[in-house]
Length: 390
Image (cartoon, rainbow, N blue to C red; front, top):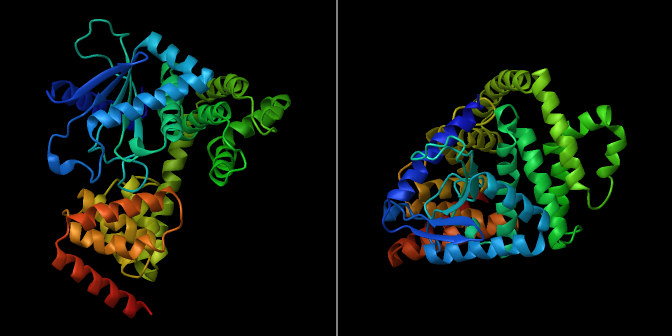
């Protein structure tokens, strides 16, 4: 049996793809054997502000696929393996809002599901949704997203690892494929973001895998101890590792223990946020409810409430998330005026990086919707708010 989250995603994928097939205005293309679908939003209001049109989105995805085939033979070979075992589908959905950055849609892999009209139960699809923000990224970065979501997660699905693998280990494998792609395109390994990626790869996502290697395959640890780890050999060891997890029932026990620990931690965090009223605690708890993590159910309304409490105390991260949720309508009614107000407060102080760029674009998109009177009022409200914070 698949983990509950996997089953949930699989069910959503069936619903999503059925809708895509039924929409007369969807655009479709096949590029290097990969089916690319541009999904027309069911309602115009659901499209993210500034989203690319379907034709441009499909073209960007095709260019990213070209990069994979031109620069990363390893990744391209794995794509060929997936294509031989099923249908590979990338969907660009300008209304997709279940991304990894607050309310911003980036991309997600949905475990393969059987074609509803197929008599062959082995007839599979490997399905990835690309959101309106990721599709605008530079071609190499969009290609990296496809490698991570489609190649990394798709290969684990094909190997059957999703039946028993933990999310931590799933992301370890996907990020190893990403590491190999970075090597193949010749990325600067000293670049700040790449250094952060490598540290998170080894110290978080693959931490348990490395612990296993130290104990059971110490001679293979040298594979890690170079600027460019030998990813194909590491993936061979990884397959042995996940099979050991399956035989020992480690994944199931770890998940049960982790759930109880998360429940206990959630109680402590909730008590701390409610009694002490610190913005950082309220924000952190809001993120948990937004992401359905660490023992909490997904609850957008509770996330909005907590983000608002933290935002009112000047937490720029809460202001940014609250602004986004007011754009998307998650947990609160859509309100471009209030969204722009909170994004105005957040954007200038937000740390430099992709997140800040996305927030700035969201601010610009909402600003362009406002009337001159609303803009004037935003200016007055933000000035008044900042004076009170001094």
